[in-house]
Image 1: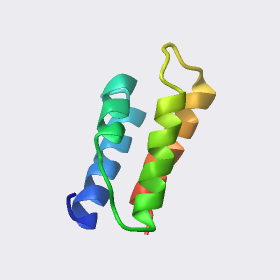
Image 2: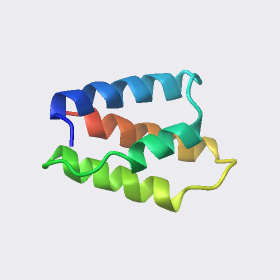
Image 3: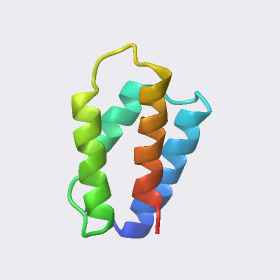
Amino acid sequence: MKSINDLVASAKTVCDRYRAGRMERETVREWVLGLGAYPGPHGDRVREAMDWFRLHNREPVSDDIVLVDIDRLQAISAP
């Protein structure tokens, strides 16, 4: 487990790169699934993102799925 500050910074970076098309969805999915455990409230959001990416693991994905992907990533870094 990394610090919450590291998690927040990484989540922002991953989200920005993904949104800009500089990171593939599968890379984002692998990043999320490899995060591990964190205390709440961030830990709850990490688990929600993990569940989301586990359920939606097939390519190609719709624009609506990508929007939820971004929402889940932003939630991880929210205060």
